[in-house]
Length: 556
Ligand code: NAD
Image (cartoon, rainbow, N blue to C red):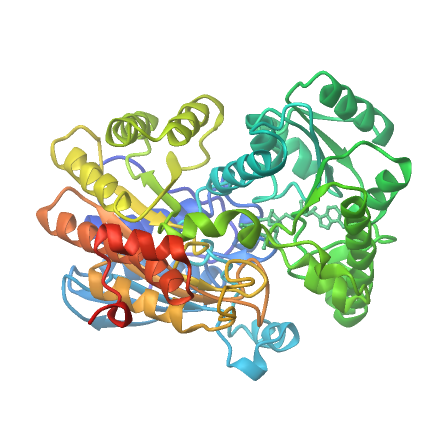
C-alpha cells in the first residue's frame, strides 16, 4: 500500500488472541514473533531494533520493519518472503510445504568476514547483525538461555561439587539479555553467585524479573553477602556495579574464596565490551568516533579480565568460557594464556549434542499463560522418567516470569522433540490450547552450527571450522516443511567465527502441520546425531544405532 506509516521507533507488541491479521497462521506466527522480539519486555533496546547480544537486531531499520509486517499481511499460503539482513527483498511463489519466510542475516564471504567490513556495510544500510534468534524471530527473553545455563551449571556441579552448587561461590560478569540468566541458574542449582555489570540498569532489570536476588551497594557489601551465603550453603545471587576488567583482578588479589568463574559480557563485539577507564555514558560516542582505538582498549581490558580468570584457575577454581569469545579477544589483546581454560561446550554440553539434545522452545500465540501451563503438563506426561526435565519444568513454572508472549524452553533430544511437537499440535486441534504454538529453537543446537570457539570447539576429528553442516541443516529444514528457516553468520562469537542455522515450525492444529512437525522435529535434531557420528563420537553412534538414524558410511 502507499499509505506507509511514519517509520520510526515506537513501542511494538505482538497481537494476541485468535483473530488473524494475516492470511493464515503460518504467516501470522511470523508476524507476531517478529513483533514479540521487539516487545519492550523482551528486547534489550527496542528503539534501535536491538533484541539481545550486543547489537543483535530483528529488522534492519524501521522502514524494513514496516515492510516486513506489511508483506507478511499479504503473503499467501503458497508464497515465500525472502529476507536479507533484516530487510524483505522479494516474494516468490513456492508451495504450501515450503517455508513462508527464508532469512539470511549477516553473511559475508570468508576473507571479508571482519568487523570493520561488516560495520562499513552496516553504516551504508546494507546489513544488520542478526545474532542467533534476534534476526530469526524466535527470541523469548532471558528464559531462552536460562535452561541451557541451568544445565551447564548442573553439569559443573556434577563434575566438581558432588551434584550441587550448595556451598560454592560463582563469579561472573555481564547481566544482559543472555548473561542475566546466570544468577538464577546458579541459585536454582543451590549456589551463591556474585555478578558484575557496568550498567546498574541491567542489574536492576534482572531483580525486577526475579533473575537476580539483590544489588549490593558496593564491592565490600557484595563480597560479604556472597561469602556469607557460601558459608551458610545458601542459594543467593548478588549483583555489583563495576567494570569486570577491574573487579575480577581485584577479587583475585583480595583472595575471595571463589569456586567457579565464567563471564558473559558482550565480549564477542569489542565495541560492546566497556574498557576500563571509560565511563558508561561516554562509550557509544567514543566507540562510534574511534572504533579502532576503542577496540584496542577493549581487547587490552579483556586481556586483564582473562588473566585474572586464569589466576583463579591456577588457584583451583573451575573456570570456563561461556561462549562470548572472551578468550579470543584477550589473546588479540596480548594475553598468551587466554586459551588455558576450556569453552563450556566441550567441557559440559557435547555429550548432550551426541544425543541430538538441544534448546527446544515454544511460544503461545494466544498470549495466554494457561496455554504454556498446559504444555508444561503435557511435557511431564510425555517424559515421566526424565527427572532433571521434571525439576526444570517445575522450577521454571515457579521462578520464570514470562516476557512478551508466554513461552517455554526445555532441552529435548532426538526422538523426543517430534513427540512433543505432535502432542502440541493435537492440543491445538482439539481446542485444549486457545491458539496455535510456534515451535523453534536457538541456533546453538546440536547439528546447526559451526563455531570453533563454542559449539564445535575441539571436535574429536578436528572438524571445528567446517561450515557445511549448518548449511545442510538449513536445507534439511526447508525440505522438511519448517515455517521459517534462517542462516546467520557471527552470532554470539562474532564476525568470522561462526555460521549457524535456525528453524521455526508452527503447530496450527492442521493435519498438514502434523506432518511437517513430524519431519522437521525428527530431521533437525537428527542432524546433530549424524554430525557427531561423522566426527567419531561413540555416544552418537550408539544413539544412531538405537534409533535407526541412517548414516551411509556406517552401512553396507
Ligand atoms: P548484552 O549486550 O545484552 O549484555 C552484555 C552485558 O555486559 C551488558 O549488561 C553490559 O553492561 C555488560 N558489560 C559490558 N562490558 C562490561 C565490562 N567491562 N564489565 C562488566 N560488564 C560489562 O549481551 P547478552 O545477550 O547478555 O550476551 C552476552 C554475551 O554472551 C555475548 O557475547 C553473547 O554473544 C554471548 N552469548 C552466549 C551464549 C551461550 O550460549 N553461552 C548465548 C548467547 C549469547
